Image (cartoon, rainbow over all chains, first blue to last red; front, top):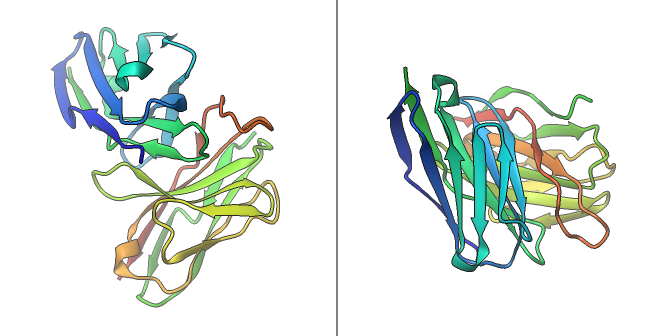
Length: 112
Length: 117
């Protein structure tokens, strides 16, 4: 059974700091892995999608990497800003299934 | 495109009442999903559909029912509301090729906040 874990559960950093959020999964046979952002009281917005054949994806100040063999993904945020404050969730879809399995998220607060 | 829309935004139910959460997408996606999110937790899959007329259970289907008569709509039905169903409900959709390989992102609706008292 696929399980997704995110560490840390919460993170507070000063503005301008570079930071890394971690996501691990137990079954490496995946179609893809996605990173989402969720603002309080809102829905989820997809940030980056990494296919199983890819090792990383970049969008602006965000870079996500994928290491299937070790069951890990990291989301790197460069030069963090207060507007980056949100909960970040990762989700995987296991090969042969149609179901996304979500982690419990990392709640990020960037202090001005 | 409006994307994924959900109604209502908020609802309070009494124990034992029933209701339907509506979800519509205008992106011609074949896959649709219902999730619930409890405070401080990730999303749990309730039901999903791979196309009109085809639905299947997710991780936490008990107490819920779904139908998919059209590509666009995927309503979620609560028959006998219980306090344990107090949660935020998200509908999502995505596209997958005929081979079933998922290469596209999921698009989420804004959510329905449900309280059962």
